[in-house]
Amino acid sequence: MDAVLLVGGQGTRLRPLTVTTPKPMLPTAGVPFLTHLLVRARDAGVDHAILSTSYRPEVFEGWFGDGSDLGLRITYVTEDVPLGTGGAIRNVAGHLRHDDFLVLNGDILCGLDLAALVAEHRARRADVTLHLTEVDDARAFGSVPTDASGWVTAFLEKLPEPVTNRVNAGCYVFAPSVLDRIPAGRPVSVERETFPGLLASGARVYGHVDLAYWLDLGTPAAFVRGSRDLVRGVIASAALPGPAGEALVLPGAAVADDAVVTGGTAVGRRARVGAGAYVEGSVLFDDADVAAGARVVGSVVGRGARVGEGAALTGTVVGDEARIGARNELVDGARVWPRVVLPDGAVRFSPDA
Ligand code: GTP
Image (tube, rainbow, N blue to C red; front, side, top):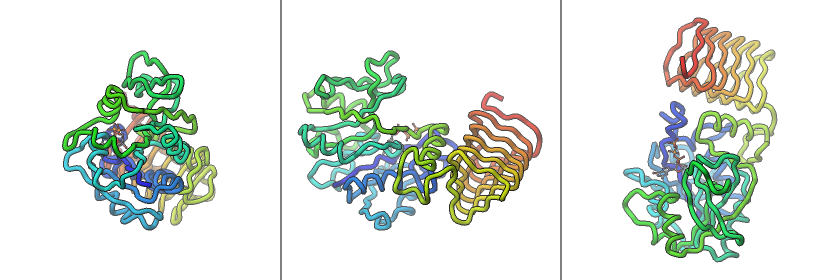
């Protein structure tokens, strides 16, 4: 089966981590996030993955190559200008077999049974089948009401008062006939244009409700949570490079004997955690350095970045190769851009400071 992975977005909400690395390629529990998705698709019967790229396409191909390391065939299709989610699907039409195919947003961590989604699509003879999940507050999502049999009746993007808490979870099965209904060569949003247009023309759009683990990794807080849940095995992944537990320490990393690394923290290759440091529920990228006595909680420390002695970070993102001077305190939502140097001091930085 073919799967199209939508991975061309700029990931603006995750800046500065996405300045150099596209969101689906950020190290998440020890491997690029997309690896978890590709392995899940492969295990559900996908043998050909089409990566629909736009922003920094070379990063994907440089890492995954032809896909054979994962037991997949991977094709890369790059947009000259971003075509949006629908335009991206139309743009890969020439690489698809004439059969039903999966479409996956490249930033969703989810425990959905993909094979069951495909089976439902075929049993219902649907044109498109969407995974629907439920959220407490649907205002930031596309809410998707259905009739009593599960057929979708409307697509209502980001309403102030949603009519249902069932939302589009960013994972679909398409019948090949739907491709011709998406205009070629211009940006198209599958959520705002294609799906409403299909409904208006009487197409059969089915909503497959599955309430398994589901998380959109679009923000720093969600990214940290997703990595933490993978490391701890809250969401299982066959791509996790080690046993699930309180910490995942990759080969070549050095953690001092009296340091504490816990709460689902991932420690990248050659990263260092110094004496007496405390790291909880965080992501340390390759070559990150947390000095003696530092405290890092719910934060991301970028590639080659350094957190100085006694510094304290909570809910913070430190860009690649940035330097946090000793004893500084950074709190919820603070973001430090790549290569920025904060001198030693006892200064408290918050997004509002
Ligand atoms: P933000 O800028 O933080 O909103 O992130 P994003 O750019 O990833 O946008 P969004 O989360 O809305 O995108 C959902 C999925 O579609 C992600 O996996 C994106 O990579 C992908 N995507 C968004 N726009 C495009 C596009 O123009 N082309 C392609 N190929 N993929 C896209």
